[in-house]
Image 1 (cartoon, helix red, strand yellow):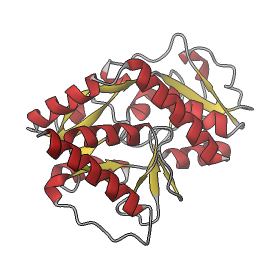
Image 2 (cartoon, rainbow, N blue to C red):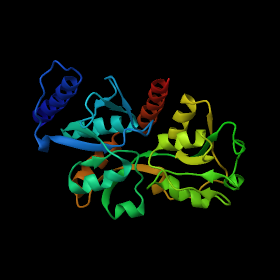
Image 3 (cartoon, rainbow, N blue to C red):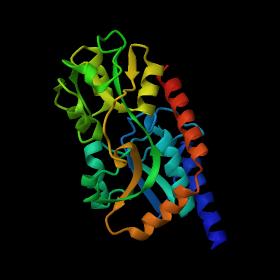
Length: 278
């Protein structure tokens, strides 16, 4: 069993190296030996897209010549290796992630997804692999840039990402205009910079990365802030309903990653995403 596990890990490494070198012959991997993971590849520092291979990123299967990096990608690598699987990354729109999982197009979602009650009706979730807090992102020159509490945004036009907890939390902000949600974080940033909206809600690591890479933005951590469930500040791996054995196996893998290591992986992901923006 140990020899088989080592062989599959080496096979996975060979597949990655082969994908990084156009002169290397393609290796056919049986579907049963793959772990196909769905990501947006557009949600730094959890996941983003790069044009060149690096020791940290991984080829995107359905976007030839593109590579995914980020905190989620490092977790996906660890999970795939420990399961003895070859990691395959599919770049998908956020709203397509759960349907793609249910249809069998992908095997797991590792994409900064919170295990909310509504989603638990459609998919299995593992234990959390990251815990965060929610903050409000605004332009640095915004009249709301000095806000300290959730009540300080009266009159603000606030937009969230469609289908996320971010969008749901806007309703906790008194006196704001809750704009129609947008599909992606880049779309939201563009809209705020063009003064179409005043603010959005994000997880702290995402806001940190945006502010470090774009000095036109700042973020506000609020006190009092948002009332959220434990699930809303957690991110977990999503699997198909009924895959309880796989869920337990991945829980064991995640439990073996110390909290200090998780924090370091996120810090490094933030640093790399900032460098990518420059």
